[in-house]
Length: 479
Image (tube, rainbow, N blue to C red; front, side, top):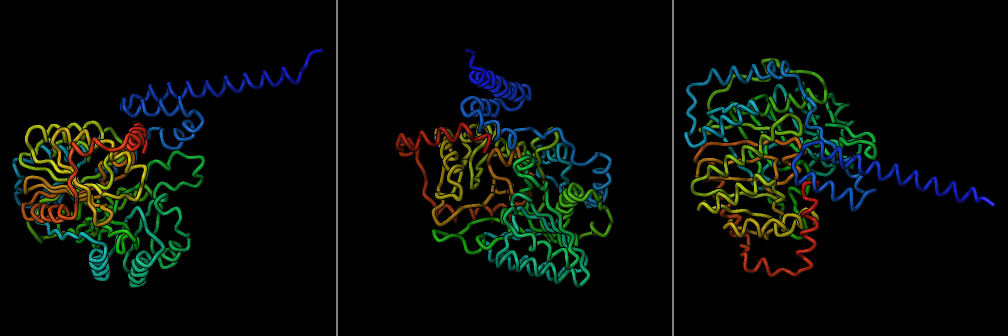
């Protein structure tokens, strides 16, 4: 007697296996044909082969490349760029440091980042001083406030800034706010609705309506930008949350943020308005957003953006040139160290050629997985002569880099795959001895609160620790 139930089950099982493994093989082929970084390709293939179901889900959310999408047409971008370009051309002869000619031209060619002279730079290394300065400048606003953060927390700091924005909007100041939808997933809707009710224009960046059915979750706006009346701007690593002021029970939150006053604010304004066009489809180019500005200081500044669209990886390429071009030293701070092969090679080559390359990381991080991944790369740089320090006083979230008493950069970009490949980021590159010396002093002060790591001790870590780090490193391009 034929057991039709058994036959049906066998057919169903075989059909499922064919569809399932066909999907896996098809996805692997798609990954290979995408012609992305070989390291990243191999990481995805390993995940898909050894964790097939999980791998499919992860690839659907985080793996599909969006690099060919267009944010804004060339015509619209050129129209928006007319105002800052006019200011750039109108400025007096702009003396570009000879040693950074290639870096400045690189940013102009791949990012249309204009170098503006005559800027004043104020540096903040803690949340308290930054928030005090931000609130003071917001109160001075008379025409417009443009604000963009990855995180607006519904806590004492977030509500304090929100209430000031509401107050200014009621006074007739134009206020526009962009927040990242994933960065603010847990923030209640009423937090932003109160802003909207007061007349503030609020937009979320790449809204993820159904997180379980979208790949947008992987492409986040990590930028921190504030522009006030087109004359004063803020950029750096801090978001609007109480922890940036209070820190943790186990230590302070150490970060770096700057205030810019001068023509470089045109670069911040352009970056914000491009993002505004992306979220609102409204191209804002009125002259009042790009006022004529005199000299406030001596700093030459470029505002450089990067995003997971277009053919270039702007900030990563700039850092490669900057590290490779260092003559005496290159110091860098980052909370996460998951470098691309290009950055890793640049650091190793510079150190091997005699440049004093120093890397500072937090001894304890806010994300254990990425911290394990970071640890896996340290032997690679230690062997090349890079000096590595663990900051002990708390969590180091700073993205500060300084070189040769002339170049410094601060912004939102971490030294990791996510910042270079997936996030929308922004950095200020500053060409000025006074600012560079201040940044260098900040690094040296932090170094006094740090422990230097030596290769002979580092290689003696337990096999269990090394194994965990090595496994996480395989997934580094996906983190």
